[in-house]
Length: 205
Image 1 (cartoon, one colour):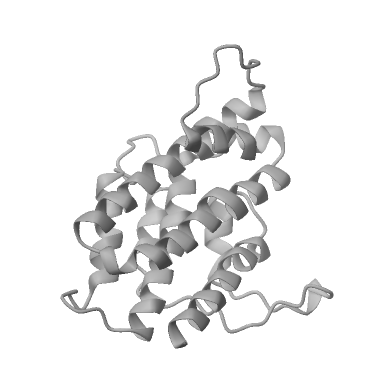
Image 2: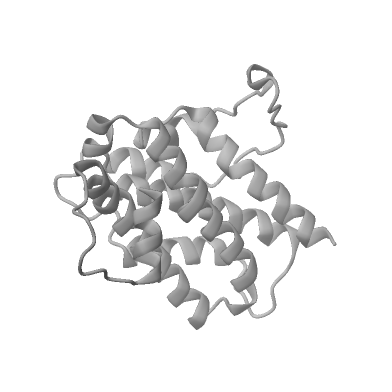
């Protein structure tokens, strides 16, 4: 799946490329395309309204959306799970984590000419532009509406112990996000926290 996402990003179309496997097709349709749509909408809003955030957004998005996230999904989900994965759910999990990142940096630094609730405005525009809750047959809409309505920052204070994973305390907020995309909660935390720590260090310099 990672290889295919790279091809999507590069825009290269190889005439004699080998046919994709069913797993790769599912990865493209259920992870690649939804991720690309969300990424494009983020880029559009950055250009229009949020240029001062371009660098930090690029670091977070490129790492989570196009490296760690797809790798975790590809390495964890079975063929059957990937075939049943909802692209809208992938988008929502990425959006919720992305919004949390915006909320965190809004507390670290003030941005001139930004509205006080700019992280919420940014996230709401992404939600609407991607029509993330607009599918009539989406059985998870109520869950996602409730998650999106949450106004609390995600706790990222618990350190990760790479040598003894069992010692890492995984916050409760990870469970409903992980459930949406059929991942263990610790994988959500281990993708989000390191990025937040890195961004926090940059902003405090």
